[in-house]
Picture (cartoon, rainbow, N blue to C red):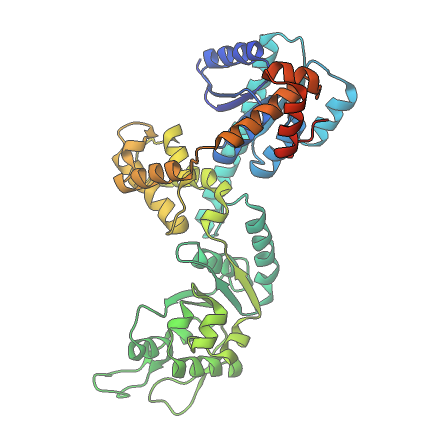
Length: 452
């Protein structure tokens, strides 16, 4: 029976690396290999794996460093450590740092297969549990924010702390970063979760229409007002009012909103008596706050009322470690919606998605996965299923960012490598380089290389 799962195998011994690669490939796993710690780190930056199978003793970046990096970037990845220098102390240290298992060399491939299968079963059960919790949360109307980025986790922790307090919150972030998702998260984790949640985009209405939408009107307040109408502020009483793009609201409207916040009451258009309201206001903007206040886009007194707590959401380009998680989430979402079985993206697509800067942020990534799911005829989204301009742009950026090293830079690296190979012995290094020792000394001085 063929098995599923993505494995990253790391070993600086070529023979050992290929043996494990062949064995795991025969089992049906998707296998990616790295011949050094730095190469593995580069792969972990761009991709997510179910299991990391790594040698402990390697130059420059060893297995413990890979374990630490993997725990930080991909906490759900199981790590199996392999070493020919097994000690009880090393095993205990690896397990304390989160390793799934510690395999000592020499080992039988059957033993490695068994450990990998056990680790994959743990991954599978955790994935099923996560999906079940998401389905239950969706059924209950709850909101989940998918992230493994440290800055986003700190932001979520702050949101969890302030959600029950009922204080006003100001959310700042570029378009598409998920400002309304955070607003819903605050509402659903507050004591107002059973009350209404009403979202208004202040930039989507003319000022006259926005005033009517927010404050409502009395009968015959203006031509065509045949009956009284409750505004959205009243409708949100007992719950949360989310005002997106608050800086698009006119100054006189901001004054009226300020009174609502201060007095907890709203005056309909054409009315003479205010109506008491019990609302929590969450506002959001994609503008720089200091610039918005300076230009008059946001009144300073309203800013101080709204800015009890500020949540500043980083753009997706600053938290690319979330891309693999988001891709998996959107694949599942749109596979269900479109009644298709699309379970993966190709390695070429992974590289394109990781190298793109996302001016449209998470919303743009979601659109890309929705498109790919719609047009693919198989279970995998390939690069051909992405927009042409995206593939061309990322290819151009990759070429643009690939700088050809100068001869001096190449010579410096080569001398450094030779010195490392001979253990810092300058006489032996000079012989390998085909120059005398004094010439080597001058080059070491010129390139500022420590010759020890």
